[in-house]
Length: 554
Ligand code: TEU
Ligand code: CA
Image 1 (cartoon, rainbow, N blue to C red):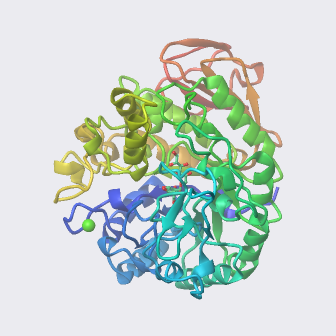
Image 2: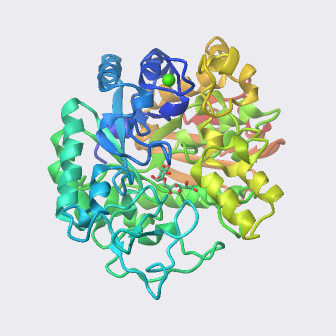
């Protein structure tokens, strides 16, 4: 297997709006990020993935871009960005930009022109279709509720938007669009950025015919009908040749609807497309029969099946990314662990389980503290367009009651990940001296970075040790993964093997003691890390609630 720095690094995702506010307007900003680079250096991460900082009307919090080469007013100036970039590089930290080019904002100059007339030079930058029998061209639904088509009276045609109506999809079949995107990407590469996370990149190539899909609970078919389209690999190979090979970049494609077979192409080891992908099958294991909006708890066997299939499926032929959390997902300690009595223990266990696997680890801001889901009280507490639209659509249509939908939002809303980072027990968790744009999780007095930095057994210091372990043990990065105890409903156990080196990772996902007969070869192994201070390894072990232990065969 080829050794690469982007396989050995650890990435930290910052959602700038909620990370650190430097000027008291209640909104996180770039100067706030710069002020916290030493905190990230202490954690030991190598790369920062910045969620979008470009000019945007913030219909989808920056994932609706109106100018790819300007910084969002609320986040600061291009000078602030340049200062942050060099300050990060001075600390040996690389910066990855969030590339959102499946769509732009409807306030982008290209779309303003495109919608003016049928013969406007920018018309074919976007996807326009005539209606069918007075209705939308097909039954595709938007990820943010309703149809994926918006009627535009000026030219009496519909435009496609897989996300909000203010996020019109770009027409990637138009070579001029591709050239515009590649030129913009090269502009950021020339500024010195180190790579890209590519937003819904699996959706950029639409099928030639827009046939109806299978209707979902809201009557529309899935927004990711377009996933893995006919030319997506061709376009990414063009991007690789015209942009990505111009620097030693790291690239990760966010691939809604990706399969292992497709991932082998996106993240192919001959490096003709991307370095790795985000797949989402493990984020769907707790979906209900009506999709995402559910509070069903995942069955560990389903989680183990998905993770193992991806570990073995890409082994030696592509590369995995490892994440439990991001700005679109609820907090993992509330979702897969215990955010009550065993919050810190289960946060450490979840991190051990994931980051001992093969793939590049991604840590989402606050995950290193064991930040939890948020006790949102009313629908007015939410800010996320997906949550707000889903609440309205699914309660008005009677799919769920308001009480049910509030319960599901508290469990799965993206806003669980978007409340202010909890820096200290000061007002507003030290995030801002102003009024925060979204509520602060009331548990910030107990859960905050300041308290954990000075406590050796904190989640923060456990993450720091895990990151250091990866740096010191090649078997963790390059070793082969093999699952043990597939049928266990409580234990997630697997080995990693590289030559003569072998590790055993055992994680108890249950809130009770579970016994285990330790494999002979590990009985007197070294304990590399464990989330209980006094872990002792015997032939017949009893793992305590949410206990994790990593053993090295001697
Ligand atoms: O997310 C795409 C996407 O699929 C998510 O919307 C996710 O599947 C969904 O929220 C789960 O319910 C990317 C960005 O990460 C997201 O923040 C943006 O809203 C979206 O694309 C549009 O740019
Ligand atoms: Ca600010």
